[in-house]
Length: 119
Image (cartoon, rainbow, N blue to C red):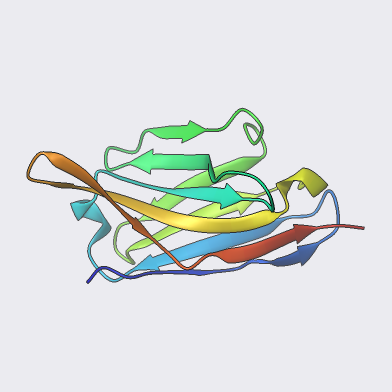
């Protein structure tokens, strides 16, 4: 059973920074992609940032230039550095891992960590 455990959420003022971390119970090299999604109250879960096993990064337009996703293969950890935070970044942030099982793509999720941006 693959487990993803997030940490680093909290409350911050607009313009502040937070760093989220996600520790995976399996080697992250066994996943084709890792990333972060978020879900605000009353809204659907949306992609924030992903990074493939080859190191290719993808960002939502709303966070481009402010957030950075990275991975530490030795520590089986994925990070999300969030700078210049805005109130609209407030959401529960979920770590995601994607693995190919035969010919299907399977998603694994963490339990989520709350990020609140407010003055």
